Length: 278
Image (cartoon, rainbow, N blue to C red; front, top):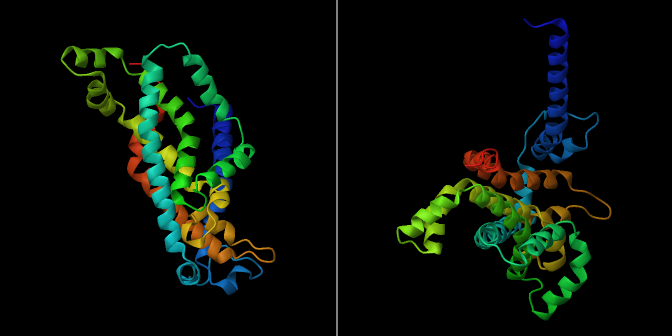
């Protein structure tokens, strides 16, 4: 039997969650609405919370006035290649840290954790000089190397946690049946680790896809710029092109939304894999 007090508490929780949901989704809603407004309606007062007319001129302007298609391709290539390489390297390093005892193991884990506490801009000067000396400034390959170095520590710690929740008996049984250690890793553990690997790949992809600070610094030519750099370019000293920026933001969100939609099952399994130790 539901008492008056418990009913009031339930209504309060639902109202609080509803308010939180509205506050969370409204910025995204406003970006989408602004993207489909004609330029003349964006600055109209009073504000229209639902467009009286829908227009695709902001999206058309992205490809006619700017090389937004090039920016999308650059971001897709850089983020995909970086995420794939980081995931493979982190899979191996996470396996080693989880399965082997060695003298510097604790120091390595601590170093990986400490690197996540250091803001990227602190290392920008030495990093930029290093990239200049290597001839990798304004080169997408150079940015890929930087992203790999940036994402490996956290991804390694993440995958190490997944390995520790997989029983040692699985690979031991495979090795008894004749598999090498690498064979047991890729033929036995990797299929079991699929949710964790997918979760790590998506985390790395989104981190590289959304990164702005390093891409603005290391990529200078218009042909090599990424989507976040292009979004930053819509803000000038005297004006902000809200229509184009909103349209670009919508197109930027689409790849990550599609990825999460198709891989949501693996993400949920990956994030909850540590809840029950097998």
